[in-house]
Amino acid sequence: MNHYTRNDCEQLDQQDPLAAMRDAFAIPEGMIYLDGNSLGVRPKAAKERALQVIEQEWGTDLIKSWNTAGWFELPYKLGDKVAQIIGADAGEVVVTDSTGINLYKVLAAALTLTERKVIVMNGSNFPTDNYMAQGLLQQLGSDYEIRFAEHDNIMQAIDEDVAVVCLTHVHYKTGEVFDMAAVTAKAEQCGAISIWDLCHSAGAMDVQLNACNADFAVGCTYKYLNGGPGSPGFIFAAKRHHGKALQPLTGWWGHAAPFAFERDYRPAENIGQMLSGTQPILSLAVTEVGLDIFLQVDIKQIREKSQKLTQLFIDLMEQRCGQYGFTLVSPRDASIRGSQVSFNHEHGYPVMQAMISRDVVGDFRAPKNVRFGFTPLYISYVDVWDAVDRIVDIMETNLWQQPEFNQRGAVT
Ligand SMILES: *Cc1c(COP(=O)(O)O)cnc(C)c1O
Image (cartoon, rainbow, N blue to C red; front, side):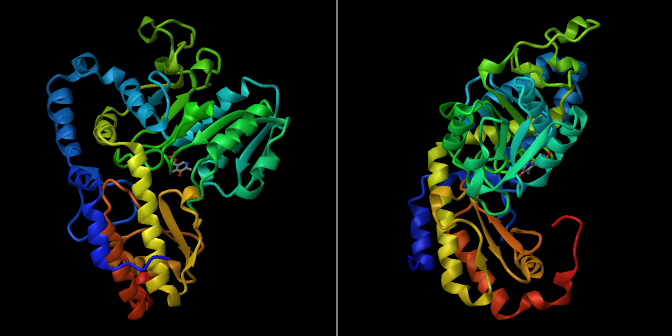
């Protein structure tokens, strides 16, 4: 374990090739924001872009903007930008709808490609994925089955009965990474289809969907990609499935000729079939601002810095907060750790509330998980030092025991 000083952290910042990127983001003064894995901060340019849509495109040009401002093309245009971040090709990704809805669509589409009825999922995953699968299976009938597995038995769970392996690349609580290449290869060997949820890896890790020969993927843009609250998610479908794997929410935007207004549905033969209907243009326009920042940097540099930031945080927490009851939940091995660090703490909820009151913003996941996300584009090494410094003070002074930190809000 390295023993760091604040001065060491300053030096790491001086050598950081991504240091200048922080300037692209509006970070509240004094705040150390370790929750970019839940809601990314606002790119400064998002405000101007939103005003442009409100005043010019919507305010003045109105309906013409579907053509003149390229509104109709936004799901595709943004999809091509996301593709560059997740190792996909142009024409394989659209930005649309929410992650949950997109998961429903791709899972349904994947199941049309096979006679098999077993879906492998991760029982401890962020629950919406499992809920959506359960809702779909309810519609499809009782002979379908979800086979739940965890990181340590995932390979054994994949066999020749499996229709689809549907996993989240990085676990939302622990930050543990599934080996996408190995799991996808095993699925392929067994004749199963792979679906990856990239909510906690798009923008944080070097994802290589096509190099792994993945079949489908979904993810959100409001976490590491900084698209803004509730910004639309994305869908990846490998080109070999276009025109073949059809999703069932067959709205007019997924039609082969939306403006022919034909009576019957005819699927688009390209990634457009994954669309269902009219998209939130304001949100899409702002999402593009976040994506454009990523296109200026090398995702490998992001991953490298992310691993260093999380390691620094673990080392400092263990050196300086070891006696205060934090137990590391995230993997120690940086190669299988996403861009977040979680600890269990018996009093996780009030401890996190006290941290937030001191402008160290992470979040709490029941029953006792305190979670810290590290976004390499705007978190510095000195931020990590200062965050731990404040946490030491909170624990030393028992600040977290004050009654106000025990009152629960609706969103933790
Ligand atoms: C954040 C997250 C979601 C979000 O789903 P929404 O449909 O946008 O609410 C889904 N799955 C995982 C794994 C997530 O981390």
